[in-house]
Image (tube, one colour):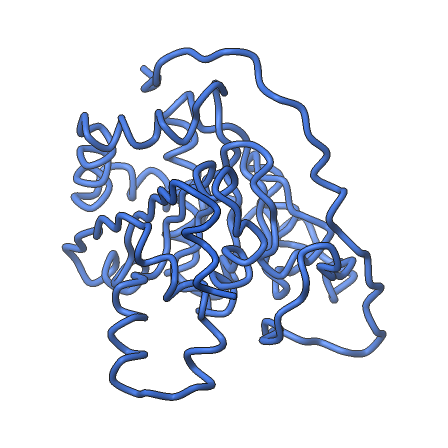
Length: 280
């Protein structure tokens, strides 16, 4: 039976497209890196995207779909998944998700940087977790997913598994106009920073949850390396530490360690816009 959080009031309306400037991709260019420069909020640039490969075949798709179905069944019975479910169902965690939901009944899941599910096991395990969480908790809405290296075969299999593959490279700059669960294990620091910069307002930060790399670890690394370039490229990640609660995720096996080591839940709670001015 699905886990439900308290029911909510009717949602507010907002237009998520109001902040985007579309930039067409250049032919022949394949760029997997995240832009490290800061783009002003009203000028966030994204790129239209489609898989580079233009061909696939039913046999290849069938093999990958079977591999994912097997992986999901195995992962569902793993110690890592059972313990993660227990963590999420803890009353304190339930309360945190309820606060993020506010007057909404569901929060969208956005998956960034999943990698190649056809070539590597850690991306498959990460996808398994995203799908199982969406199936287990009825307050998690649909899954939107993006990685620039996704192949046409992978895109078709992801769609068959109920995911929506985005046709725009948002570079992590999705604005949380509604409660949003960002599923981002093992993404680059700059991608988290882009996400936070795009949502650097009290109301928006209170509407999002990030499941991804430990921000505490980023802070420790920045204090040790003392590099201005490193600090500048993740300044929002470092600044949000004053208004964030981080809950680590334990790993138990070689498989879960490779896919989820150093991963944490991040909840945010700035109380006033003035609290966020320290970044400027």
